[in-house]
Length: 356
Image (cartoon, rainbow, N blue to C red; front, side):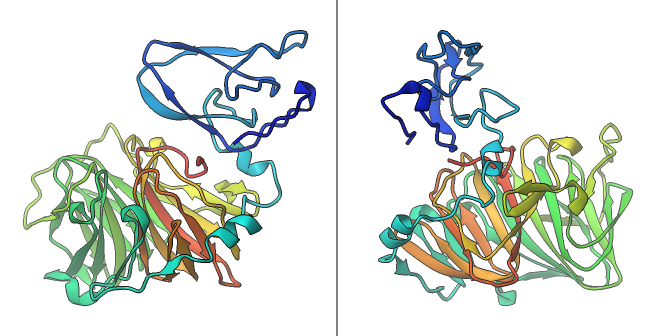
């Protein structure tokens, strides 16, 4: 909630954005002065100042996050700028920590899954569940059967050689390279690839992996699709109108967010308009409980800690996969002195800095 005082001049807007429901065609006046007691909307409190509200018309009926900190560059919408208004990312308050002391600690079941609140879970992939085709081993770690509705995630393990042609039919495919290096052949167009990088395969294109060393790859298909098609022939064509596909991690272009950072890899800059992939670093800390308007998968690349979801908690470690349904409250705690590195992917596309 936003904090208010009796004196509008002293009114301080809490940094977190406001979740509101917009109606298609309706006009709204977004407060730009920080004085309104009806945040995020104008209540006329700006009168006598140089400020004016931003009036906009909703293009469709939807739930959105409107900026409350007034630091956004995408007004009236939140762009995550509130995360940089403090030196430290929003951490769990002592009251929040106390309220979750009674959380039930969930152990992994025989399938390596710890089921948390709202369908969220932590999973340790088990090699025994792999399907083997030539030099490729793969398994689903997030699928429709796990109550995912927007995206699916496979772990691919490739040994030396060239895989068969692979395809998630007619959906966006985003690959992340956890380890190893080699080439990705997308419908006859080859890209050199290394770890800590992502690549985008457009709908209708097949791909294969060429490597001289073991590679671990996570493949996201979006919208939701659980089946990976494996064939001997490529009858697809590389879409030359979209030549830029590969994005490597580069600290020089990362977004600093208080005492942590993230970098979007595959996103709209390579014409991936449905799904966003990012890499992020988390210091030893415990984030405040928050939510996103997207469905998300997270892979823990290094580090360990805990995932809190309200009434349940589970341990997380290097190699684990986390699934977070749309709007599921969660708090990721890093207990590792060296911090935690993670890869995330979510639908619909946007910024990982936006939460409420």
